[in-house]
Image (cartoon, rainbow, N blue to C red; front, side, top):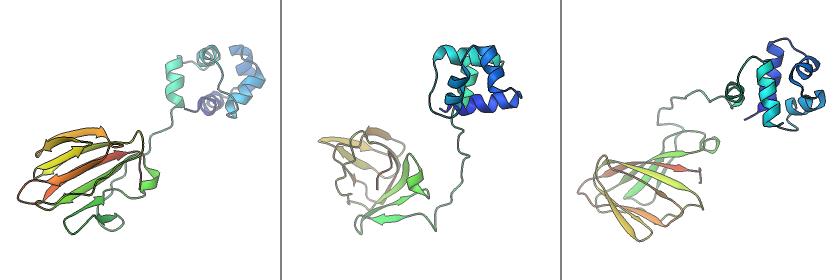
Length: 183
């Protein structure tokens, strides 16, 4: 949240100077300047007074201060996506590009009949979500086993050692989303 940049943008949209906003809100010019330049955040009281002068309630001011969402990007798989093989029998494909700019990593896991992935263990506070697309997958997290059939999901602490094993007679596929991104 960048409250200062939002205050500056909204103030300028109303063609108001810092001095005018200061007089109307009761917030000192120096404080407003520091807020707009990102040197301080200000107080809840100053935010409420500024929002009132700008003709909105504080929740609207805060909503205006949220970082704008990135526009959605449609990314076909293929050239530019990365594929990794754990072995001849298992591997995964990263389903997005520029992964280091993302907060989560979606991957497609493929495991041949009877095969398994190596044991993985993410960093502290890492998480994974697995959605079984095809086949039956035995997911071992720490020492606990879960059986995932098509349509089943599991959300777990990825900092625990974990491994996937295909217990079906044909290739198993699963969508995995992990956060934070770790390569």
